[in-house]
Image 1: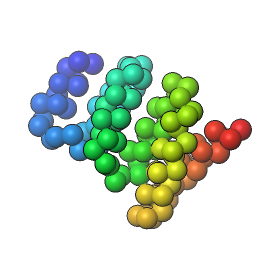
Image 2: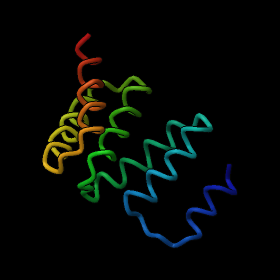
Image 3: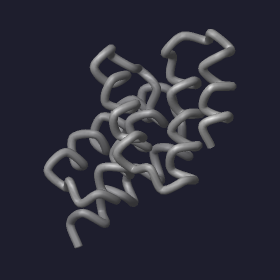
Length: 102
């Protein structure tokens, strides 16, 4: 796993959403939720405008039981998805938000 993380980091792609999402996928595949959350939170602080990014962040918060942080991330994903007409993220973020209210 560390080799994969280093491979992605070694590409010198910066901290854009794609790189962070790739690293997050690796972390999640290995059950490293804390590392995934740290990577996502750092990028969120930099002001991502990608709806998928916020949906993944919300999913991670939900997985670790941080529902207090989950709702705002799903709402941001929904707003951004509507703005760019991303129906896939819109549907999954709305489903996640609905899951919170159950």
